[in-house]
Image 1: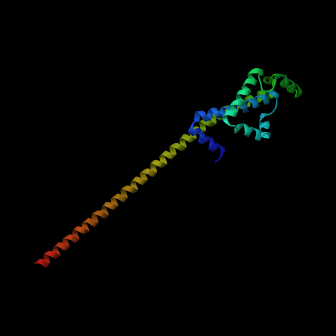
Image 2: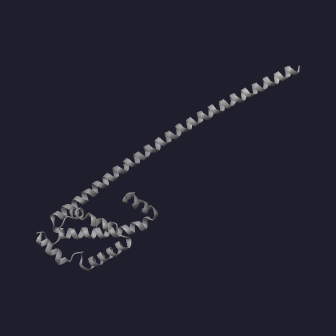
Image 3: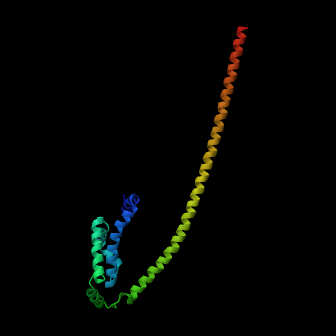
Length: 188
């Protein structure tokens, strides 16, 4: 079984609980992602080089993930990010980035790209939805045709069976008449 298969099986059992448990690990990864963005680092590259650690976070027991998410939340509520603001400021100065990440042109470009991808994804979802509806309709039509063919085959089978039965009954009646005629001839 794959991880996705296991997740889908667990989700079928208790979807609300499963999604709640997964939300903690997703929150932790989101906090790390946001912190990396504040530092001016590339989150994709970071997660690519630290895949093992990311997988450990994703595979944490729910109660440990909840504790970690709560700890991250309290730190973020207290100082605005996981890393202290003065450290972030120093890192951004060293990299020559503006103090406010919103002023960073790369940050804006990424945000616009994400918005464009979301817009493209919604049109793709619509076309995927239409394609799925069409495929479902075709499957319904194929099933109806199969059922109709099966019904016709069954009717022809039953018709042939009743004809055979009638022929056997007729042959039995003829045999009985012949037998009765032979008895009558022998008695006469």
